[in-house]
Each structure stands twice: as structure tokens, then as C-alpha cells.
Image (tube, rainbow, N blue to C red; front, side, top):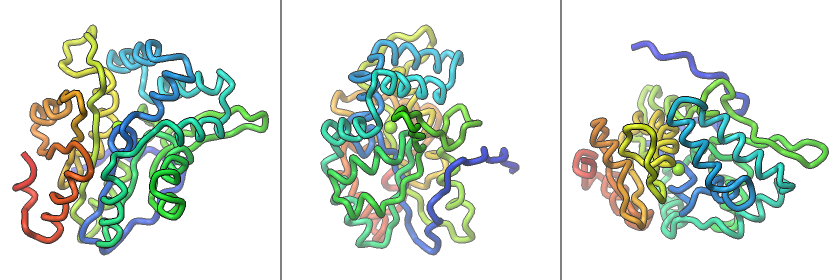
Length: 280
Ligand SMILES: [Mg+2]
């Protein structure tokens, strides 16, 4: 089967972890973090939630792309005079990690399982949040495949997209495909979310909430290449993404936090369970 040419990347990739039996790839916002950090900045320090959601709808209607609306979300934060250093501090103080992530990460490290964060956000902000919650050392060494930032001499800044030619800004499938193509590919675990807080009625016949769909559209290109897809559920019990996966015939396992997921991953790693036993 021929594959479309990958979009050129403006940013380097971390080296491929060859010879591993298992590799974990995970979305950052809303999956490792409890809330989406970019939504948080836009809603509280940029042009606000209403405008952000209006732009989400434009993406769903095909009038705009995630890349362009996300650029505008972040530009509104910079336009309000918030420096990039301010943003690091804001997020360090307000964004929390899934309570089980630190232990999950330590367990993976102890079992020689690489963990790679695959995000549409900006790498320096992710490392700033990680350094507060998992420590400086882990925050430095963890692989992150994301976008970056461009900071200008006057202190203004803007997002630097990894794949400017992609409507997603970062085509996440390019993070997982090199593993799929290895002569002996590892078992690939992918973690994603995609369920947003409040569903709204869209001028489209979609059963999904806006942020869910915008978020999930970015992840699905990577997630479909995983061997085991874990879909995070949210406190409010919404399950849009599970509905989507079932409809599309994408096998997955639901999880509420990384504490709950660790025994499942463990059972596959030590061979007590097969993948088919944990996904549906
Ligand atoms: Mg997410």
C-alpha cells in the first residue's frame, strides 16, 4: 500500500528507540495533564473561551484548520502582553498531571519501556510543567515530539509548527510510523483523550462535542497505528471518543487515570494477557 509523502519537518525528532519490545506514545494535553494547557491559556489569558470555541466550530465545518485556529488562540495570549516566560509560570502553577502518571513513567523506565510524549503543544511549555511535577531530571530526559516556539528580540513570541504544511501543524502519525516500519516493531501503546467538558450543539450532524473532535482528529492519525489504544475518560462521564472508536471499529481500552492503566500494561508486558483481552 502506498503512503502519502510525509510533510517536511522543521524540527528534529529524538532518535528511534530500536530493539525495544514495548514503546509508549502519549498525547499530553488532557491525557497526561488533567486539563488542556493551551485551552487554559487561551481562555484565561487570551481572547477567551467563547472565541476559542467559535474557532473550533470553524475547524469542524472545514472553514479553517486546527493549525490556523490554534495559532490564533496562542497569538491572542501573546497579544495581551504575556511573555513566553509568563506562560511557563502560568502553566507550572495551574496545570496538574494525572495523579498516576509519575509512577507510570517510573515503572516504564524501570522496565526499559520508552515513553514518548506526542503533542500539538509547544515543547518548552511541556518541559516546564513536567519539571514541576516529575522533577528536573525526568523533565529533561523524556522524549517529546511537539511544536516549538519562536521568540522575537522584542519578547513577542509565536508557535513554530513542526509541520507547517499540515493542517494539524504537527502530523502525529509521523511520530509513530517509524516504529511501525522497524523490521521487528515493538508493541506500541498509544494514550489519548479527546473528550471535552461541555458538548455544544453544532451546525453539523455530529454526535461529538467540539473540542473532542478537534482534539481527537489530531490524535487519530497516530492512534490508528498503535497496537493498543488507551482512551481516557473524563470525570463527567462523557464518552464521545469511545462512541467514535466503536463506530469506526477502532479497538481500544478505556482508562480513567494512569494508576488504573498500569496493571493493564503490566499484564501485557509480562505476558499474562493478550492485547485482545484488554481491548474491545
Ligand atoms: Mg489531548
